[in-house]
Image 1: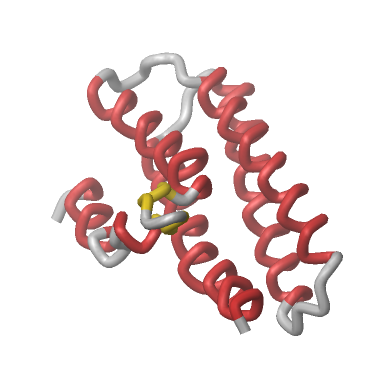
Image 2: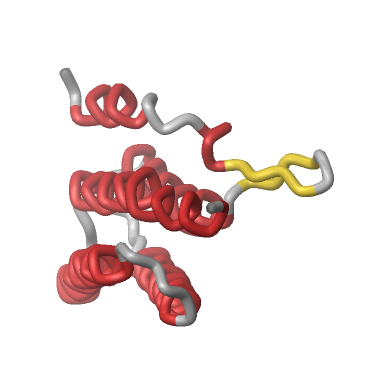
Length: 141
């Protein structure tokens, strides 16, 4: 099975519908999905369509977007008495380190392997589906 087929099989469990929220009966796509996952997918698609193309600025933009998201979310969680805050922050640190390493490699090599982006995507999907869902349940309780 190709890496692309494996990715599609794994992520078929992450339903786009689950990444949406409803406000006044209007469906709004979750910003984590549109701002982060979709950016990763776009970079992967560019690399698959045109192997070796330059994506350094795209990866750096992704890094900035992720960093801003993590800072905002950490600030928000710090205002709460969220019982799983430590685990959430630890996972954010793992995400940040992984993406920072990828960004550094990309700048040095002027290229990136789609498999590394698949890994970043996987880490984010797992974070959203586990850690962010716990936070959402806490906020709704």
